Image (cartoon, rainbow, N blue to C red; front, top):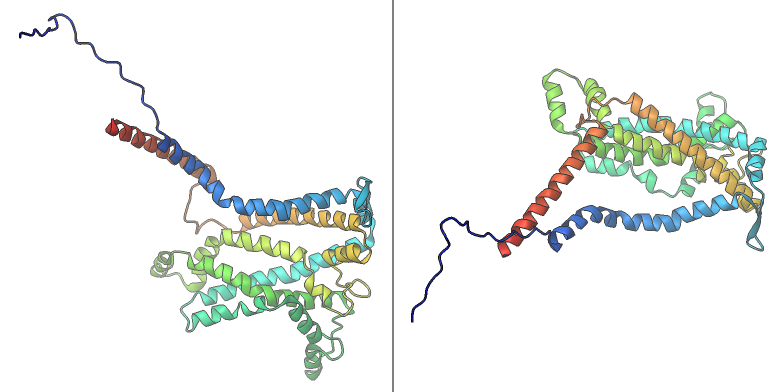
Length: 361
């Protein structure tokens, strides 16, 4: 049996099979989807819960604020901006707004200064550091009503501990309840007592995140503790300071428990000496049963808090320098580099997937 093999002619080139186009496998696409979608899936439970328990009540309150709401029929008649006009035309609103800002400034500014100082002390190498750090949080754990009751008795006009001590020292007694400014100081003292430790621990955590090499290099260069604090510690606390100031602003403008429990009536004083916006909101809504006006007042307070928070952010960013920042790049540069790194990661994932498919073939 003979067989002949056909040989290609010398002048003809061998025929090559057309190369199939490379295809990205499902595993590669899945890794890309995971890279894009997984962060949103991880944070989605919070936003879903916030939409149900936060955004919906805010939107519902906005609807009620434009209506003359009837609690019996649970419906209302649309009246436009009449509720907002009524709130802004009331002298009590401007008194409450003045009291709110006065208590806010008397509490937030000393609170922030004391919190920074105490956090700087706790950041040093002292004995029983854990004990002192936990001790500053004890006032925050106490119930607000208990704190308000204790301090309202301490600042009593006739038999209070503070006035008794002042009279023993030969000083005149202070009318803590009848004088507006004195009542603001007393209420601000309650707020500072409760929240200074909370802000101290937040600032302390930020201080401990500052690399120790900065302080070692400053010590070698001859910088003292005060210079290190103003040149390293304070600039490095910029993001944390912005957070603390904004949260203190929101809490200070929404103050309710302390003025509510400052006397036995809870209406802000006989002459509205310590009436705040939230306390008046409570009296309008649950005292007068007028939810339309209360909702309008709530939205006015919401807009005021947004405006003051934005001003605080701008002022804090301008006052606190970036000398201690660990990343000198601008936000635009960081975003551009992040996008470039993401594109490189996608290209690497695609090339790994293609090489894996060629290996399997």
